[in-house]
Amino acid sequence: MSQRNRELIPSFSRPPSRVMIRRVARYEENLLALIYESISEFKLPLKDKTILLKPNLVGLDPQGVMNTHPAVIAATRETFLKLGAARVLIGDGPALDRDTQAILESVRLKEFTGKLGKDFCDLNIDDVERVELQTHATRLKELFLPKTVLGVDFLVSMPKLKTHHWAGVTLSLKNMFGIVPGSCYGWPKNVLHWAGIDRSILDINAAARPDFAIVDGIMGMEGNGPIQGTPKAAGVLLFGDDPVAVDATACRVMGLLPEKVDYLARAGTMLGHLESSKIQQLGEGIDAVKTPFAVLPEFVRMVA
Amino acid sequence: MPSLVANILEMPNQSERTDFAAGLGDEFVSLLKTLQNADGGWGFHAGEASRVEPTSWALRSLFGHAEAQGTESFRKGAGYLQSAQLPDGSWPPFAEMRAGSWITSLTCSVLAADGQSAKNVAAGLKWLCDDFPRDSSPWMRFVQSLRPKSHIHSQNDSYRGWGWTPKTASWVEPTAFALLALRDAPAEQLPRNAAERRDLAVALLYDRMCPGGGWNCGNPRVYGVDGDALVLPTCWALLALREAPEKPGRALSLAWLQKELAKIASAASLAVAQITLENYGVQPPHASRELQDWSAQALAAQGTHVLAWVCLALDPARRWAPVSATIRKDAAGKTS
Image (cartoon, rainbow over all chains, first blue to last red; front, side):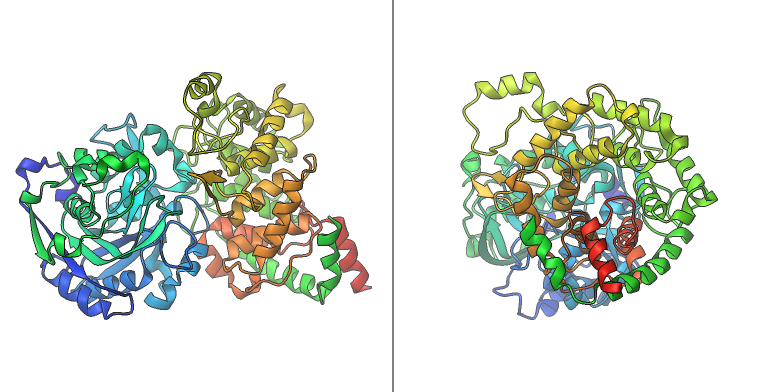
């Protein structure tokens, strides 16, 4: 992670964030060309860097509706390599099933990326390092986090566009739950639930804030996500250099109010920009791609 | 389980398969031994710092081989585990983490047969039996009783198991491992409330079973939607319930696992499913993949625990979760 992302920077002192929306109807499109073109516009400092892509691999998903699609992961990896990265790792620590290989097989990741070998990291069983939490959003004083996550130069959160039955939405910030190692905290990482899901999201992202976010909204999930919801085609990919701004934009695409998502409202004070006025919108406009997502009754307050 | 056990007869070339598996297991065991660190423990991967869980699984796997007992390798491994134990009797995932966890159950189970670890095991089991999940405390249940009936979960909170971390909530896998620890430990080491904890935990496992059989992490139904079972939680739960009173749910779950096995594409799930079915006297049907599809190095790359599970699965004479006598007898009959 960059030094900037190891520090808490209040929103008022951050420069405007950039978020790009691209229309993509199907995973069979030329994703490499589209993703290469999109990421290139951000002119990211990638030369000779080690990058970690953190997709959302939450469970066995032969239908491709709950996990970040492997075609998006593979095209993103190739893009970063073409842009000069020395190494692009892929890593996740699934929250509910410790058989990560079974999940990889079910999403057919290898068919898209080729053999990854040590370039895939099961974050649930990676070596860990103690991180003292700065935010104290929860009562947790420390977390043990994977050395791979803490050691890379550039961290990319790659969630699926989904609603979530506990947190309201699960996007690039909530996706970071997956870096918390199950070998220390279990499957699910229940200690975070007891500390408060919303507040845990803040502590985790303050400890390991993504440098970039890419949301797979080509096929999303509405209702009782993140696993048992209903597939919802939104036909978009979102890119951005601020995970809070990306998540806020993703909410707006879903017809939801980001300021009504508890953890996003708090994140907007210290981790990034929530307000539209501080987000430079690139690519498609939000209204042009808006696709209202259904939410559970507990979250109707979020509906715009 | 007559309908399931009958499948043993349909298994071709059982003796050849066992011989082959045993040979392959030797190669895997050799690699597992070489991964031991100088401090006696194993990391999740080669060259990584020792952790309690992979050390426990490695010892479990190596301990099944008669020649490994009493060896320097085993004693060093047991020594690492003893030194990692916290003063309260629990085991953390690794030394720097100073809080106990579900791994206490696994470690107690593994060290239960080691006479030199008797005090460690007794202290671990006491910690375990004193640790109650907070979500089902009398106070929490009282608070729940004042609320409208939940449409989120449909579980019975009067049953209590164990959590991944202390004083949180009951989940299927840590509950199963605690039951296995209580089963594997000598009776004289069990705390006084062990029987009561066991009964509550067995009831919890049956309560948390998925409607179609099998278990996931412990959410059989959320927001009115049935949860899907997963292989590993199902296996651990079935192994934990092996000596529990028979209930229809157990046979249903065994049938689910038997059916699911054909689709398993990972070594970890395949190995543990095979161990579980053989423990119940059910010959595993042919799967889409076989354990010999993976090299020892490939398994080690997935984690020491995966390599250890495969070693166990390929060991026809394993002591823990042993192959049922029914299957052994059948294999012997075919050999002769």
